[in-house]
Image (cartoon, rainbow, N blue to C red; front, side):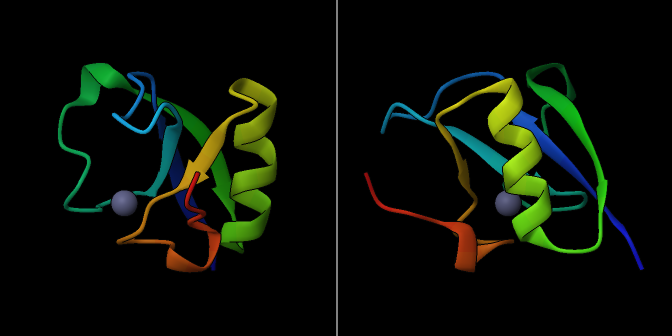
Length: 70
Ligand SMILES: [Zn+2]
């Protein structure tokens, strides 16, 4: 089953753009989110997100395996 992923347009305090799975409690402001697409794995979502923002980072909440500290 595929999950829809979004990337936050606004940079985080750490200077990166966070990627979220749809429905994540950490992304509620639609106007600051850009759809990345639908993917079967968070890995694929992050790869595609990096084509939008090279410094894309996974959300620590909804895709912790793709979350990397600066
Ligand atoms: Zn999230």
